[in-house]
Length: 297
Image 1 (spheres, rainbow, N blue to C red):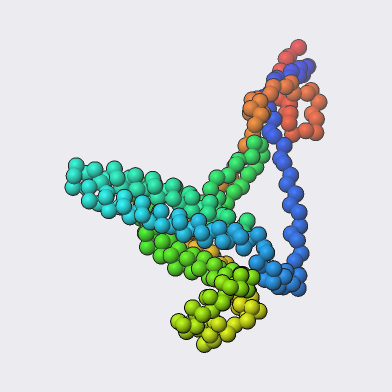
Image 2: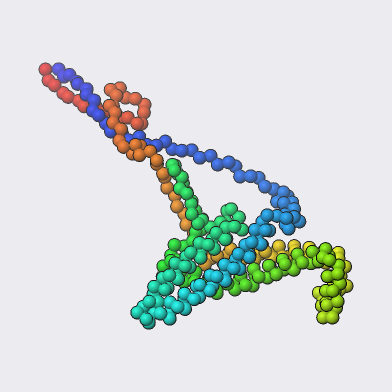
């Protein structure tokens, strides 16, 4: 006759963190009609839009920044090449040049983000969540800019032969047009004695704008032409800023994507021991281990 003895053995199980659920709200439904009306309203009120003032500051700072970056990069480049025969000191200078280029690219990215839409901005730095899943993708400043690499050479070429000429042509042009448009709008409100003196000066020099003598313009002509020039200047600001942004992203940025899981509670990684039940339970966290002993009477 056989008797069956059942024993339970401790079994290790790992408690896994529960999966987090993410709920994304549905995208807004933007009709073409609403988008068209918004674009028309934005165009009409563009002189009063905050983005216009941001573009003005962008072109002003971009012009100064391009001149400074061009001067430093060109000086360090020529100095580094010239000092290579002298105990290879030029290598050290060229390494300083690459570090400077990387710093200039970081500043250029911040300047880029001031006028770029949210979905098109360059990721300068990002925060990893304290817990849970994360996935971040986009464009960033290439980390190879500070090394002797193809990316570093492209960045040097960008600050010398691309950014500086673009800033001198585009940014200086829109700033000059903006100043001229504001002067035309404000001219009728200047003291009339000053206006008469300048009209006589213009008449002696036969100053013409679009085949019309300036001294023949009425105050309303000054205002209307100034407003038209102002709207045209704002349009050029958007176009030129987009060209600057495209050049920055092409020469100094790279696409990246990163994802991972952050678990803050370290105790979740430790094994938890529990005694397996005698009767099987409908659970996936515990498992029973049954030992059988056969004895003969």
